[in-house]
Length: 87
Image (cartoon, rainbow, N blue to C red; front, side, top):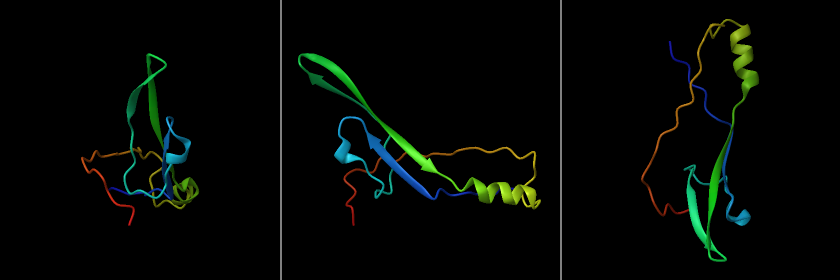
């Protein structure tokens, strides 16, 4: 049996620019950007944050809806979409 749990919130954080951090986009971006700073290459990363309601999962396990020996997997998919408008 499969039981899907979807996140409550998610966001992408960009190390290169604090003002670029976003939680509005449908796409989470995990990337490594290399920029030249003062004559040397500096690596900037993005990070993704995903929040799940684990309280609901715990309740489902205690209620017997989810087997207590269940295995959980995080599945993230890649996309090639570019320039997605905010609207």
